[in-house]
Length: 324
Image (tube, rainbow, N blue to C red; front, side, top):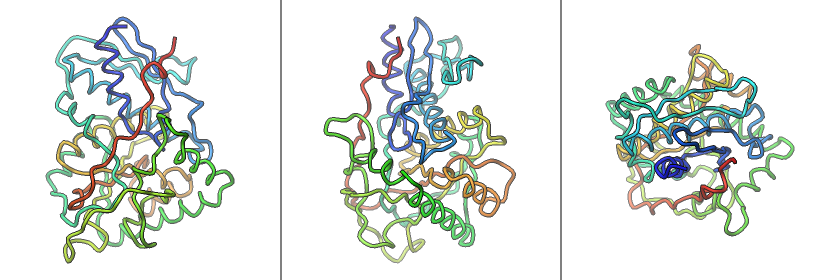
């Protein structure tokens, strides 16, 4: 196994995934890397149509190309290369030519998922435009949810999704399984990465209700911005809703999250509104009112003042995710 390829895959493992399930496996060759979905890490109740699984794998695929670019290697990506193997999502070969995306490489180690309130300081339009450009280069569109009416409709679809999921048989148990891992586990969402909720109105209404958070909220500058915070809500969307569309949406998600991190922003991927089919349809028709297919909601904003640093969330060691 070439050391630089192994190092790039190890860097890619920092990619975000639903509930930090890390639903991927890898096969590393002499000059290429295969990305495979790991069906054993699919969340059947939370993610009934495997959208989250594919988005997660798309994010780790983009992280890999950025890690290779950081090492000076150009990546040639063949998506869905084997019609007979639906788990084989991509083969990444080292090619000739300029390595694109190297500027995002430092953000791989810096990015965290922020589940606390954010600052009342607004995000400049030029940064939002840059994030949209990153999404477009990765094969998706980034649609902002602006205005009080649209934001209220967005909050409502998240409320509906949460209500439907909480009443779904097996959902509470699945959520608890991935937020109460055994000591020494290398996956799941630890309590130290989940914000404490002091009241039912604390924080943004679109955040998933994780149990037993221990992360302290940061201080807020009162009297400025929106009543919750000044975070922006951006929807990653695609023209279609095929396996390839979902994979590309995951790549675009990675590109946006890394670019936002480099700009100093905090970020939160929010998948709950797209996990329930009827709610996802409402997100497209009543909130966005566009023909594109919503794949994921991203929350971006400035970190709150004096917020404690976000901890690393665990990742599985490289040998445990390799295929023979």
